[in-house]
Structure formats: structure tokens, C-alpha cells
Image 1 (cartoon, rainbow, N blue to C red):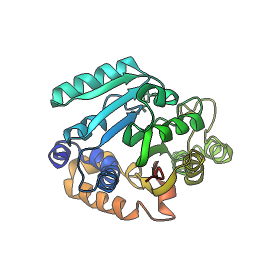
Image 2: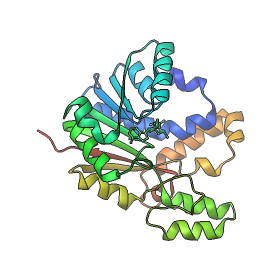
Image 3: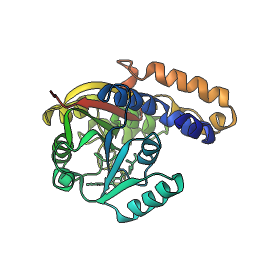
Length: 253
Ligand SMILES: C[S@@+](CC[C@H](N)C(=O)[O-])C[C@H]1O[C@@H](n2cnc3c(N)ncnc32)[C@H](O)[C@@H]1O
């Protein structure tokens, strides 16, 4: 299913999401041996970029999102794909009240912890929402990559400010409320009683390469996907990735 879908998308898009999907597939097999259907809760799932493909793979997917507009777009996207995704409006911090504790085998929280009012409170709620033995998938913006990208663009003062700022922002004009390092993201998960199982870098090289090259040349895109996959767990290179992907397990039975 997913392979068919990926053939339709551009090379640059494939490169950006390939490592993440590879890891998610492994996690779904690990938490439900044999890869049977799981209950997946996508917190801040937005318009369904992860939720709809997961539903297409047969999983029971619920999206909890603060934005009614995003949920409306999600419902349209799910209908077009011919799958059902449950849409619940609410805040990440209220997850256990919205769904009940331990409702999920897998909780996704992708590109959301950067924006929530209180990351520790949201993290505690994610941990409560997953069943013992289940897993949480966190995807966040990486601070070190942002330092590199500002410097490469010639914004050296911004890069220095970003490096020194605990929240990983380069100034008032920075639209990102916070960015994470491997350490800060791991501490957040551990603080909620979760055990870090895997930490990968997503888009280590992809954002340093002109997108047009990848869109025009499928073989280049394939080679870069192989390189991203090989480097994703490298102890130095993963820290340079645009996004950090952490999979944490909830200790269980
Ligand atoms: C950048 S989008 C990410 C969407 C999706 N997870 C993805 O990776 O494509 C952030 C989403 O988080 C939602 N969001 C932001 N703060 C939230 C909160 N406190 N609780 C629930 N959803 C929130 C926004 O409405 C938006 O849909």
C-alpha cells in the first residue's frame, strides 16, 4: 500500500519521509508482533499526513488536534482515500481525559512539541495515553541543524544566538517556539517515565541538496534515501538532522 503511494510522490518528498516510515514500520511490528492492526493515536496529527497512510495500512487511527480546520481537512483526506480516521478536537495535555488512559498501542506526536504551551505536561499526557508495552513516536525540529542552516545561509549572528539559546531560537523573528537536541528530547521522554528505545536523525542531508535534482532524477532520490537510512542512527550525524525522531517505550507487562 505504502509503496504504491510513494511512487506517486516527488523524489524530494520521498527523501524527507523515507527514514521515518522505515522506523515506524519496525515499531508497529515490534509492538504488535506480526505487524497486525494497532490502535494508533496521532496527537497534533493535523491534516492526516501520517494518520491516513496508517489507516490505509489497516491500523485503527485517532487524530487529536487543537485545530477544527485541520480536522475537517483530515476528514476530507480520509474520505478521498476510502478509510476511516476518528477525529477528536482537543489539546495534547488533555489526552487521557479525551481518550482514557492506556488507549493506544502507539502514540505519534510529530512536529507538535515545538508548539505546545508546556512540553513536559504534553509528554506526561502522551505517556499516560499509551498502554504498558506500547510506544511513543516523537518527531521534533533539531536545534543543531538549525544552527548549521542559519550559518550556511550567511546569518552568522542568528546562528550564534540559536546555539546559545536553551530554547533553540535565533531571535524574535523566529517563528519556531522551540527546538530540541538529542539530550533535551531524551530527558523529556525519560521525565514522563518512558524508556528511550531508538533515536534517529531525519533529513541529515536532504535539506542541503537542491530539491529539483531529486525531483528530476529518481535514481538520485533512491541513492539519497539509502544514504539517509545508513546515517540515521550514526552517533554524530544524527545530531545534525533537521528533525530528531525518538521512539520511546512505556515499560510494560
Ligand atoms: C506542524 S503541524 C504537524 C502536523 C502532523 N503531525 C505532521 O507531522 O504532518 C502541528 C499540528 O499540531 C496541532 N497542535 C498544535 N498545538 C497543539 C496542542 N497543544 N494540542 C493538540 N494539537 C496541537 C496544530 O493544530 C497542527 O495541526
